[in-house]
Length: 208
Image 1: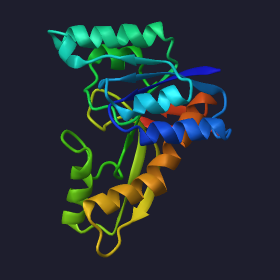
Image 2 (image 1 turned 135 degrees about the horizontal axis):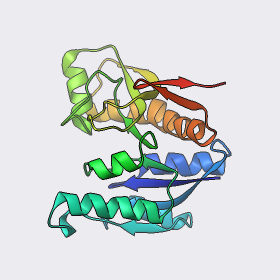
Image 3 (image 1 turned 120 degrees about the vertical axis):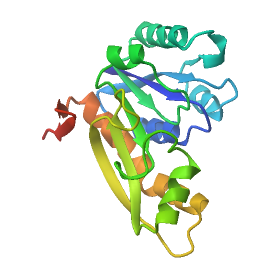
Image 4 (image 1 turned 45 degrees about the vertical axis):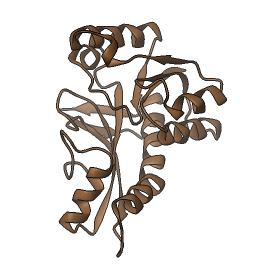
């Protein structure tokens, strides 16, 4: 049974999707053992508490240097014996120590079809604003491993979502979450927990 540690900063809708998937048996061979938040007021902490999941707080501003924060988060993840780290709306940049110590063991969900609308600065509503500005007919979400390049790690799963007439960034954001993010993030976590993902040259192969 792999220990899954989820990193959050806000409302925790993707955390809830993971909790629901675990309860319904869609995640096997893994269990959410801790939720770590960068924001002590995040509603995600309430979701964790309501489901009996231990929580921790770690704030970047509590450390003078980024290197100190990076080391502290690495130590906390190691203390929690994290086999898999999931970024579920975690709004603080990960440092080199965390990434190197958990190589191909950190999964992020991005609200677009990478390599479109991704990279530094592309998060939250801005992703959907740019998709609508470009006039794309299809967008979606991507579950991927995290490396040193922002949104540049190996892609695990992608799911497309159609853009509809009259969409606003808020409406599109909700549809992408409901039709893509909340499905493929638990699926990617389950694949990892069952040792079904092989990484070769920054690409993944999903094993039968």
